[in-house]
Amino acid sequence: MASFVPVSVGDYLKKFGDLLNKKYKSIKSNDLVVKATDGEGMSIETQIVSAYPKADQSPQGTVKITYKDKPTASKLEFYTDSQVKITGKAETTYFKGWKFTGSGAMIPPYLIIPKKHLSNVAFSAEYTQNKFTGKGSVVYKKAFANASPPVKAMDAVDLAGAFSFGNNGVSIGGKVGGTYADKKFAVTGWGAGANVKKGDIVFGIFSNKFEDVTTGVHYKYSKKTAVGIQTTMKKAFPKKPEEKKAFSSKSLMDIGAGVDYKFNKDTTLQGKVDIGLAMVNPVDTSAKATLEQTVSVGGVMEYALTDFNSKLQLTTICKASGADLGLKLTYGDK
Image (tube, rainbow, N blue to C red; front, side):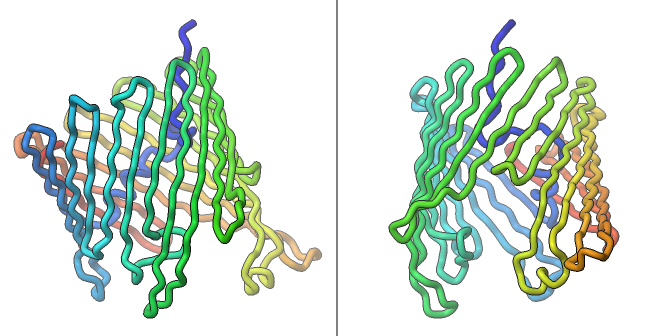
């Protein structure tokens, strides 16, 4: 039997469950994207996002410039937006089996969010050969002191590693990460998972520190149709004072099911259902636990306007609180 190439590092459930996850994030707001390319490796992409109906916000914009060099198998990216966040990235696959990536970001102090939006410099190396994939990365993060809003100066280094190994339809993998700050090193997270592929069906399971378990299955029914389902289970405990008064613990289960159907080469329809269940255990042990549930239904229609070198996407997400509608038009290089 032929060997099975392992799944992408750190993305063990890439095919599972919510088939629309990325597209919903992409077109949740109404936006216009314009792309242009010179045909020799250089491309420019601009995006304008409407903040409507939030009247206190003005439209946001981004600009991304990309250059690809075939002789060195390299790619350069430069990105900025209307909030003056500046990022750059360079990557190359010139050396057989290796992928090297370097990046940097300069975030203005007034935009800093602890542990998220920090100025940083990062480097990663990924190696893939036959049945094995391994990846390591190091990120230096820095926050510059600022008076208003108050931002405390900070220096930290994040280290991370991951691997996956596959053979005869079975793939296993693991990842671990840690942070060095204030002259101390602490493990921030680790996880392990496995995939099993049989024909057009892929099963998977993944856990973060054995505190939660995610399982999923993806089935490519035909050339036009694919379906998937994913379930995540975990235990949650109160952290804030008001939460400690409300409950002692929660048993959470999230279920997502999706379908992807391609009518023709230009038209694709995707639909999904998300169900969230929470068994809430009260502080008073003599009281009964209560069940909370949420349901959302959504869909995306994607249509390629080939005569206009464009792509139109329409989306809707319906919840008990109301419905979100989205529209995205992409013009230019597809």
